[in-house]
Structure formats: C-alpha cells, structure tokens
Image 1 (cartoon, rainbow, N blue to C red):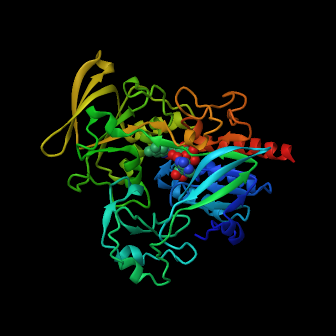
Image 2 (image 1 turned 180 degrees about the horizontal axis):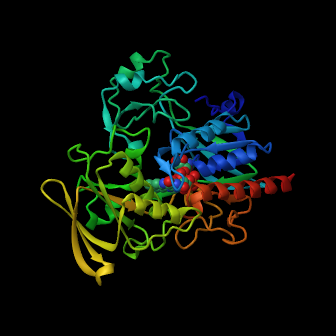
Image 3 (image 1 turned 180 degrees about the vertical axis):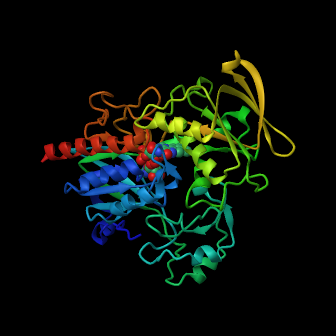
Length: 442
Ligand SMILES: Cc1cc2nc3c(=O)[nH]c(=O)nc-3n(C[C@H](O)[C@H](O)[C@H](O)COP(=O)(O)OP(=O)(O)OC[C@H]3O[C@@H](n4cnc5c(N)ncnc54)[C@H](O)[C@@H]3O)c2cc1C
C-alpha cells in the first residue's frame, strides 16, 4: 500500500510543522475525521502511536451485524487516508504538551526510531526472514510469534519494517541481508514543534485486562482466551488455518463465552456497559459454527443488549443457528488435568442455583476501558474527563464532539464505548466542528 506519511523534506529539516488540524490516533475514527477535513481543503497531520494506522478494526474478523470482512472494508479507507495529499501521517510518534498559542495551539511531536529508513525500505520480508529472534506478536495478542526485525502485519500502512530494539540481539543479520541497506541502528528519536488551529482526539479505547478478573484464570489456564484473540483466530489474516486450543493445538468442540468480563462490574471498577461485547460475541459464535460445524457454542450472559438496527435479528439468527444462551453469572473457572475448564455459575433461570458446566475452550468477552494517554497530552490547560475517565463531552446530547478546551474535539471511542458505525458518525461530528472552528479563526 503506497503511503504519503513523510512530512515534506522542508518541514522535517527545520523540525517545525504547521497544519490546520492535528488528529491524534489512526483508527477508524481518526481516519474518518482526517478524510473529512482533508476533503474540505484543510491540511491535516495524523499522529499514530503504533507502527501502522488501522486501530482495532484492521485486526477484526468480520463485523456485526452484516458479517462483512473487517479488513476488506477497512483497507480501502486506510489506503484513501494514506494517499490523500492533504493528510500527512506520522506513525510510531507521540504527542506531548499541547498548549494554547494565540488563536491556535502548539504541541511537541516525538517520532520514535524504527531503526529502518522509511524512504529506503521496500516492505519486503527479508529482514524478518533472517532475524533469529522470536518474540510474542502483539498484533495477534500473543497467539503467535514474530521476529525482532519485522513488518508490523501484512496489511500494515505504512508497510515499513521496524526493529524491536528491546529484544534485538544486534547480531546484524537483518542489516547484512537488507537489499536497499535500509537498516540503521544509529537512528534516534526526533522532536518536532507543531503549530495547529484545531485538534481532534481519536485515541480509541483499551481492552479490559482479562487477568484482572483473577477468578477466570486468564494467563494461568491456557485454554482461557479473550475475545480479541478469538477475533484474530477467525480473521482472514489469522495466525493459523483454523481455530485451535492454545494448550494442545486441537480443534475445540465445546466453547463457552463469558459476557461482561470487566464491564458492568464494580468489583473491577468498571460499572458501565461496553456496548459491543454482546454483539461481537454473537458474531464470533456464528462464525465459529461456520468454521467448526461440529462444535457447540454456549454464551453465558447477564442480559443481551441488542439495541442497534438489525441487532435483535442478529441475536435471533444466532439462536436459530444453534448457539446456546444461558442466563447466568460465572463465579469461577477451574482447570482440569486435560486442559478442559469447569465453569461454576449462578443459574438465573433456576432460582440462582449454583451449577457446573465443562467446556474445552473459554472466551472472555472483555469490556472496554478509556485510553489513559489522553490526560498526558495537556499539561498547562488540563482536559476534562468524565467520571469514567473518558474525554468529557461538553454536552453529551447537544455538543458530543466538543471538549472542555476550545478548538479541541473528540471522535470515536475516546469519549466512551461505541461500535464502528457510531465511531464514524462521531468522527463526522468532530470534523464538522473542527472545520467550523478553523473557518471562524480566519
Ligand atoms: C473483540 C472486539 C470485537 C469487535 N467487533 C466489532 C464488530 O464486529 N463491529 C463493530 O462495529 N465494532 C466492533 N468492535 C468495536 C470496534 O473495535 C471499535 O468500535 C472501533 O475500533 C473504534 O475505533 P476508534 O478509532 O475509536 O478506536 P481504536 O480502534 O482503538 O483506534 C485508536 C487508534 O489510536 C491510536 N492511539 C492510541 N493512543 C495513542 C496516542 N497516545 N497517540 C497516538 N495514537 C494513539 C491507536 O494505536 C489506534 O490506532 C469490536 C471490539 C472488540 C474489542
């Protein structure tokens, strides 16, 4: 995929950057906000913390309720963003110290070293092939390995290799093998002073850390995985050819889903509903019945919240396909000698009786949490957060894209849990507000 993500040589040499808008985060909300502004003639700098733009959407299998392939609908938008002449993308970069500067805003951008020269790397996998070091692949949430010299993932944009310097042994194998001599271990971080008129925060959400729910055994029992891992196992770019149990590589035949893991749960400090977990679990259950037709899938739930257009029909479709729904709260998961798992739960439909059920793979439908990076962006004029630590919307009903700082707007899941279509709508509102704000300054 071609990319346009290098600032002009002139801007890079002076370390001074000037744009109409800064969009922080290159997920679906950040892409939509950037494209809306760019297509209206504004110059946009998109700053992405990771090595590639794409956010969570590029990692998903299919999307509810249409079951469209997520990567197939995400990549054209990524490509459109990367090719837009009004959008400059800085990946592997972070924003610090946004402050008022007259009518506009100033910020510091820090670009971390990839140890690979972006203008020389062709995205071929030779460095990866020659690298002898294997570590856990964060893109696949630890289900597979990757090398210390690596292309972030197949659909990465930009498709430029990077060296994971913390795990690199400096053996030089990648450097010797790289045809265009793109590896450069002397690279250092670079700092840029940025002037902009408006900022859109689109830094997305964090997954609830499943290990925090100790009684469910994630991280201890191999066959307890989380829902983002299952989305990776089901994706067209999946690490294996099929859905396999981590303990023995066998295809599971009796899978359980535990809904509301880390959401609607005061014991872990997250009382709110994550809005997406019911639907993504029902999506995965349907995909599993297609991938593993002999497998039983049971969803343990407190309530099913199927509130969007076509969602209730999607739930009914899951039931008619044979997904079993049990209204019950899982108290504890225990591991058996063969790696199978016993779920102890309160059966709401049988007077709250404690019941046990055995499964050979358990998927924890983890909730979502706010991205804590946000408060670090603003030191002199703190950005207000809501009681759940998401970016506070000036008025949730009437001005959902405005924040407590004039000229700073919020898009997507930075302001609270939402699915992809709502993230796109929210990015539309943020970019319209930013455009009006910038025009008002002229
Ligand atoms: C298991 C699972 C399955 C799902 N399935 C579906 C589905 O089927 N259908 C559906 O509609 N929704 C689904 N969702 C929800 C969907 O993932 C979100 O709605 C969507 O990703 C939100 O997009 P976003 O841009 O707001 O955030 P994100 O996708 O989180 O993107 C945020 C971006 O900001 C970057 N960033 C973070 N911090 C910084 C920083 N400090 N500086 C710069 N950049 C930063 C991140 O690296 C990332 O690229 C699912 C979610 C999960 C967890």
